[in-house]
Image 1 (cartoon, rainbow, N blue to C red):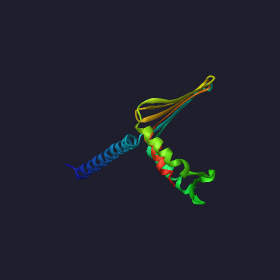
Image 2 (tube, rainbow, N blue to C red; image 1 turned 120 degrees about the vertical axis):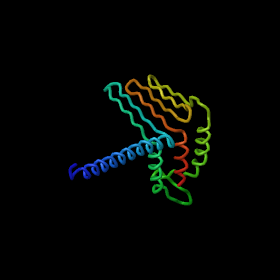
Image 3 (spheres, one colour; image 1 turned 90 degrees about the vertical axis):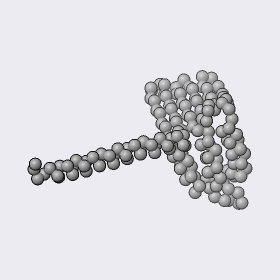
Image 4 (spheres, helix red, strand yellow; image 1 turned 45 degrees about the horizontal axis):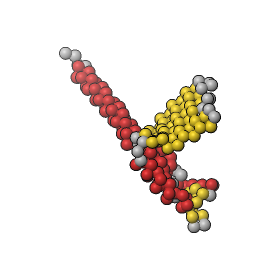
Length: 162
């Protein structure tokens, strides 16, 4: 037996521990990403541009949208006794309570097509399927689909409470 045998055994153990650590981190990362998607849902945007043949698919975790909306708070301020949103000067007290009630009711509502608008060859459809809202725009040049968790709009209205 050589004098280097204990060092090789120790080196193998260190590599084994490193491999196990990386495996735990990889599994933990996959579970964390899965939990973010499962808990918050996903906002997805699909665009198919027909004339150029360009396709885009963008899935966004709803939690990221929530975090972005929380950044809107600095753009709310009290002006003349009323909350206003940004430069628009829209008085939030006038419409936000009703918007919250409507969005909460929409979240609980059964599946349905909410509105369909047709203008020549262009068609826009808004529907609720399960816990998601679907907006679909079909035009001769482009086809766009947006799907988002209905509760995302309810949370957005709550965060925009200034």
